[in-house]
Length: 541
Image 1 (cartoon, rainbow, N blue to C red):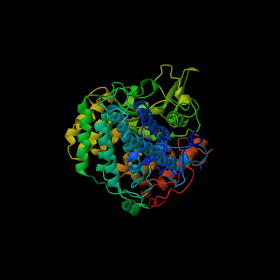
Image 2 (cartoon, helix red, strand yellow; image 1 turned 90 degrees about the horizontal axis):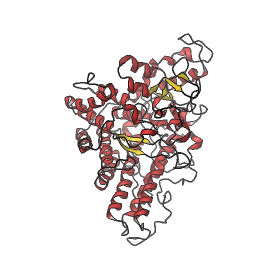
Image 3 (cartoon, rainbow, N blue to C red; image 1 turned 135 degrees about the horizontal axis):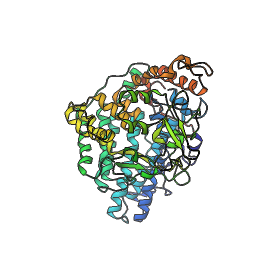
Image 4 (tube, rainbow, N blue to C red; image 1 turned 45 degrees about the horizontal axis):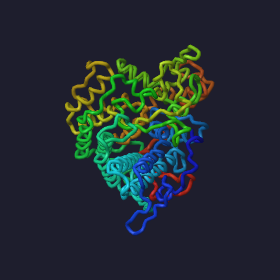
């Protein structure tokens, strides 16, 4: 919810990292000597751990763009002029809160990372082991922040010094080179493995490098290319860079061959507070202790299932219609475990011994992974506590990255092994193995394995099929004009509720509004509405 997300203590000049820093020191220096270098291992660890704060604010907010601005999710967070609904309808501008929040806090994370690196690196009071750990952590998180920035905004300023005021937007390749530099440094500095995935490790850096090279290997659109299609209703041509895709396979193999991670046998045990950040499949997670204890609790449950056991009620994030669930059901009946955990169509409430149904004409399915079903009594306490850790990357993603890169390289038969490991976990046997997967098979697997895990929009950007995918909402049930007015009778024969009239409005807006400019988010204002001075603006905004 917006009112719970604003951090009033954050400086407006977020890109001026000397101002926006978690350090209480003044970063003063004399010649080449840093006078405020940290003075102990404990101080270095505290400074490095403080770099997580900005990312904690984004754990749920990512979904308000990465899921919400697709065919699969609509937002009814407040009135229709609020930022969630605006993004849902493809109507955001530089002042819309979620682009503002995510952009500014990613740069806030970078500023904190820069501060930690600057003040830990020259210290003679910090042990080599602690210095490697803390600098490695800061570089990994800085690389991760830039990876989100370049995917959502394209060319962005590169700020690696605490006192930098350079707001020049850098080329896509320069940003990716910075990401690779940070992550390879982190990979060399961090410990081999940590049983708790909230602690970055060599494996986490390797996994993020595999992700980075897959994204880079699919040749993100440049500013001029987006400008050429900003008003188009046709997707741009897909391109790839085989050299970078080979690197994606190479880094994925480092994770796979390292032997530290594996698929959890029970898919449902990946999610919920009982299983957080300790499963052998979790590679990197963002820790949350709840609203009262960290920078901001993880509101993923709060936003995705806002009013438990109430129906005909507007959640902050809604499955956009019944069709994503029913299409999956019709096309692949056997994939029941993943489907029923991704889309909750029935939930049992032990407090009144009742089962609630979430599907039309009552409701749309619930974002199932947002409901904490890891407790045996099924009472969703997570909605109150907001303390579930956020999974940034898990082992299944590394396997799928490798499989996709191999398919794009034309090595389809080789892609079968990593892909089928994921499928065999899903189906419980090898009966559904694919001998030579296609790119369409890979896309389906992304949607089924990682539904509502904050991947969807970024994948549509990579595959260059954002427009065509969003436009498929015209086939959704409640796109039909018979659902336009509350109180009318829909084509299913039921009286249309205000809820489904709103679903219709959002589906229609998605179809009509999506176009080429939405391959980028707008360069936003600062947190207080000020001009950040970053030019040029992204095309069409």
